[in-house]
Length: 164
Image (tube, rainbow, N blue to C red; front, side, top):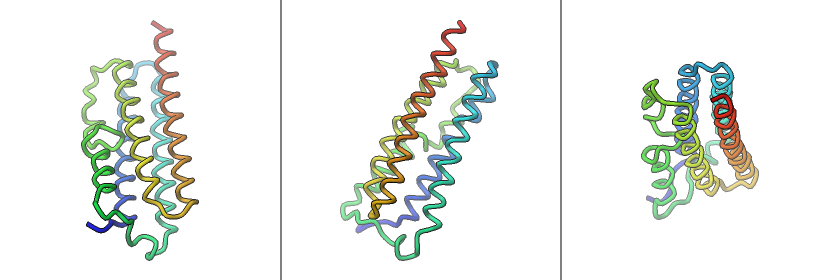
């Protein structure tokens, strides 16, 4: 494999962000505590914003810009697909479906922090696929947002623990 298209990348990103938003929405509906539910709903909204952000970048790229990302060994594609499909990150297709309703807030936050960490790894790999510095900087902003998600999740957990 000599490369893959940015369209392929944007499909991976869309899948990842969509799955993350679905996870947070489902987790929010499971919460009895209104504050925790609102915070998890806010996380879902932020994932939707990431999805829209990348859709806008994709829309702005010309056909020539979308043609190929140099990946002679296929490693970048395997890395990104692996994170999206198999490692339980934000893009794990089963992430939201795995919630049964019996999980504690601690369990949900633990899953979410792990997913956000996987997401950061995904975006670090993704950043290398972009040729234009502006696009790379845009992905860096998303990485910073994902780091903020971890902090927010820790805040939800700490607030929950204080109510016990």
